[in-house]
Image (cartoon, rainbow, N blue to C red; front, side):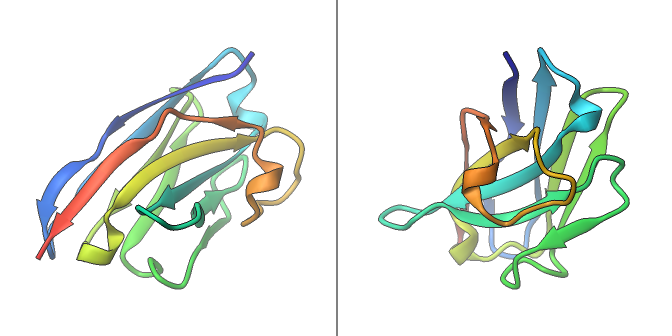
Length: 125
C-alpha cells in the first residue's frame, strides 16, 4: 500500500513563496507519475502540476504556469511543489497524488490512485 505524507505549506503574503513536499513509501516511487492538485473552499479539486517518472516532463495548469515548479527526487521518494509569486487566489488545500498506471502525466483526478493528506496554503493580500 502506497502512503503519501505531505509537509510544508503555511501562510504567506501575496508575492511570497512556499514549498510543499510529499514523501512516498510502500511502493516503487520511480514508476509513478506524480501530481499536485488543490481545492479551494466551495470549489472542486483541480489540477495544478504533474511530472513524469524521471522528471524530464512536467505539466502545469495555466493558472500556475511560470510561477510554480514541480520536481522530484527519486532517491528520496519525494516530490516537491515550489510556489513563487503567490496570489490570494492560490489559497487552497494542496494534495499530492500518485498515478501508478499511466505512462504520461495526466491532468485528470481519476487516474491518480493514491493521495496525500492535504496541506493548507494561505496567501493574504
